[in-house]
Amino acid sequence: MKRNFAIALMFLAAAGFASAQLYTPTQDILGAHLVGGRGCVACHTPHSGAFGNGQTPTLDVANTGSVALWGEDLSNILGHTLNTGGGTYVDALPSSVTAGTADVMGVMLCLSCHDGSVATPAMMKGITYETLATQQGFTGNPPTLLGNDGTGKGNYLNDHPVGPSATIGCNSAANPESGYNWDCSITAAGLITPGPSMQAFIQNYGFFVSPAVVNNKPAVMCTTCHDQHSMNAVVVLAGATNRGLSTGPKSGITPGTYKSMFFVNGPYNPNTATSGSNQDAQFCRQCHGGESNEMHGGNVPTIF
Image 1 (cartoon, one colour):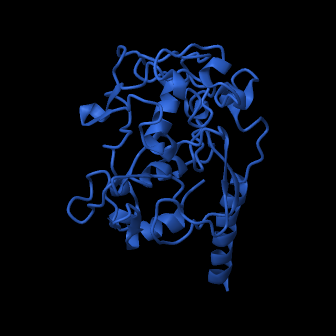
Image 2 (tube, helix red, strand yellow; image 1 turned 30 degrees about the vertical axis):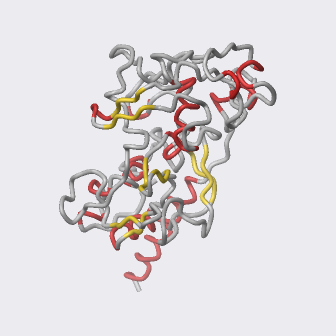
């Protein structure tokens, strides 16, 4: 009887962790992307592209605004070369607004504001709207102008790999500490098929990232990890189809709206007061399986 009672308490405690995370936003989910109250039109100009936002493009003028009604000037980003991840990942961006794939164009659109090296930073001040995890003793704001973050203009070496060359692979059996290394396989269409350990992880957390498919391989783009339209909240749906996967289980966490930060597309809250929380590490482990509990023989759920 006592044993059954203890088990019941454990289930109640687990349910408490899940329910405590359900979140109601207290500010507009666009957050910093409200851009001083301008809202959607700060990026998506209904008419005339960059001209509609008072800018004068110097390159590919005829196509300004033709992709996603984009209203920022892409001139300085066109043809730019990204050198990320310590220099291992090098990608030349298209020289025309309409020349790149949709995913690569997405990187260009983000960098038209977030590049601090060659692009005009628009209204950006160079630091995030949100501060670091003050409850854990950290202060300050991470930089938002990439390529000009204190290490000199044009330096993307200390930024996470992004672009067509930043592909995701499966290699856990050969080297469980190599980074992109879940026990998975890649289909001919560039989708990820989870193995047993990855399936267990997805049940414990989920798979909220959205890999692009470039040359039939999954690759990391800006929007793989970030949802540019929601700064502080992410909705977890019951039975939702996992993005970028050919098959696999659904997230086992309680459906609902969860707190997020920095436009991260998943439950992500560095300010959590819960001792021993692993939710932020879980987000990174979606791709970096070698650092997961499951690939080390454990089956630890997400601790909120």
